[in-house]
Length: 316
Image (cartoon, rainbow, N blue to C red):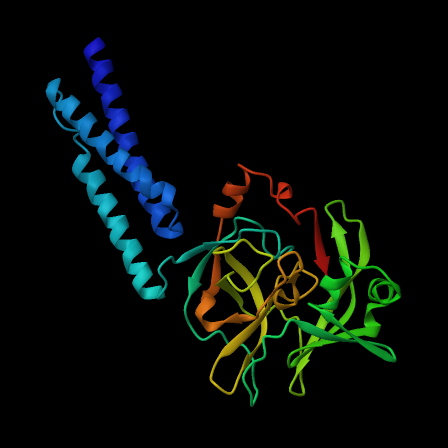
């Protein structure tokens, strides 16, 4: 009986090690996180050790080893095929923050596709300017600020900033070729209480005007030109429109649904670092469709409300 229990214990331990190897490999493929890559060799060594111990004790190798290995390599081939077909090195993407509330929650999982993003593109006849100043228009006067007026008013007080807070519809600003028009949005907390806050309601460039549309694609892109986000992180925000300049560069104007202004309007005053609209080279793909349940399972381990910006959401 004791011998049977030991044999059963080895069987369960070996199967668990095989499962851990498969899980770590799967996580590494879809996230490119270094931690699973470090743990994979240890899982492989554990499997070899357990199999050799089973054999030395006279139990033989795990009868299901071939089936487990076949399932492992089959899953690996499936993931590689998925990478090839979707044209993206990591075909799954997870929402990392609360900037897309209320439509999308942190840890929601999506397949990412590299395809035509179907974003309206405005052509300009000159190189795109990456200046960091904004010309602000408030009723019958104007002023110039470094960064956007919204970012400026997070650090400054005064009558003009009071107008942005109390009567945002009277405020617009031009940064480069784009004019941003402010208005009032409702921000609701988790208990359903709402209050008015200033936000960008529309943007215009080259005689064309753009407003928020749920049909606009959500792009996954790297953050290197956006100082308010962790560097080398992957962001998922909605693209309202794009500008293509005279030398062929295309810039995408993105905004989180839960953010009051465009990504390109944020300014890092501490480091004097202006945001630049997302370029082609930063884009990894378009969020195609949500994978059910995965995000819900992830959120069970960590409360979404503990993340910055998750205590409320923006309503149009």
